[in-house]
Image (cartoon, rainbow over all chains, first blue to last red; front, side, top):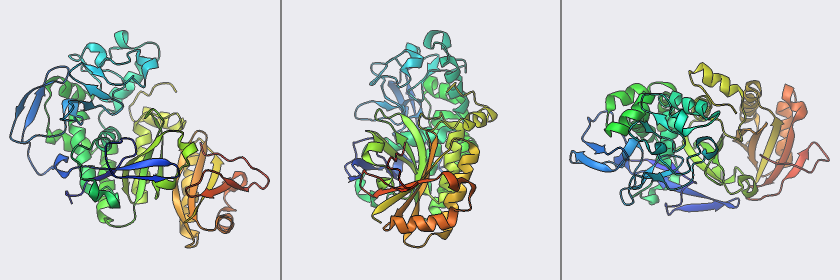
Length: 331
Length: 102
């Protein structure tokens, strides 16, 4: 089961296998099995980073593609994939402009150049390690509310974020195995690993990882995964496992031309879901596949824990997010 | 399947979403083998059910038979396009030509 970790990813372009349909390109991305988390195996090593994410020490005989702040790191370039953007620890800067620039007013700086006190696990907004925001220095107006929102979903909603990180990363992938294009249970389990490094202990975990740089905290991973969206992800994984080889239903994320989140949807055939005009230069990002009921449950969970995209506008999810203990920003 | 039939409603509330899922489930249970209920999306004030079919007009007739008693049937819009195409042909309401999935 742990040998097959296959992701469909339409967002990134590094994977060789691609298809074209309805005028837009979709791509297959493969996840090497050694990058996945095995709850039955103890930690085998750890890596320490300086505040900006430059690697300073490593213990153990094995390595991992999970890097600074618990996100996927490209060993060849040193870049860290922080979901919304790639981050370069060598310069302490993001490579691209902040999608939330109008709120943060920080186009490239990582954590407002203050990584000792803060982290930015989504590549969007700064999170203070002490769970308070650097709102005074980083944000203006309603932005303070947005930062609080991110703190809130750092724990239970890590599925979507870590899943996106996984989907967008492919060093050393063997794309030849991607033809069936399905996620399997192990893949979702692998998401749990990201939960650890990213947010296994609520928002404080993000800070912990940022400052201490420690990985493989398996105990917290399982604890965190049993809650909220990640727990649902496990259920979906089981369904996918049960249906291995069968026809899957895909949960996708529609991305805009700048890679921004627009909305989620469910389809059996991503290639024909939208016309090229409807995609408008954007892409579909396949988040998971499995039984339709589980994909629907995942879709609901993502809505209830993650920021609401501009093509969604389902205001009722704002109330659900508040009930879930989040503090969503004004939309 | 060579065509995508899209059923579209206005919708933004949780009640709308639940109605969409209920209608999608009903179609999955009832449509003939000539059609496959592909899924849905929801957002931008509209909600859509996507159906793959080789015979969009016939499938729409089946859809009408299944959903005509549903409270949301009265404001449905339906159009189809080739699976890899761009242009929609509006089936319902008759006479309309504009159709867009946002």
